[in-house]
Length: 132
Image 1 (cartoon, rainbow, N blue to C red):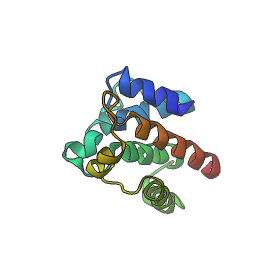
Image 2: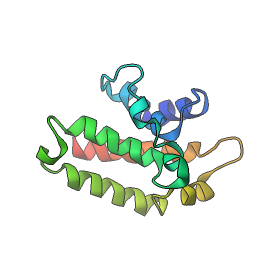
Image 3: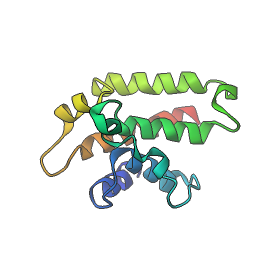
């Protein structure tokens, strides 16, 4: 299950939230990313290092791009709308897209925001089932 893979990567694999979501999706959905490709999303962890956009959300948007886009984003019908819909669902479920705000709500001692990362993966799985 996507949530379990991401949780393990986040806590035991020493990965940040964005890397955990992308690498979990790569394993679960057999995306075909090569070792090291997660470096492309790594800078989004911890809200891009400054507490802004949630890294788990950024990882999800990267997965949407990888699973939906065949040539480029602006030539992929519905891609922009899918990203907007996912972000709206994320905001509705978690209350914000800002890392600092989310960390205040979801961080547990010794767990970082593992439960949030895993719950975000549940949202992504449900969304992809409807979209693909």
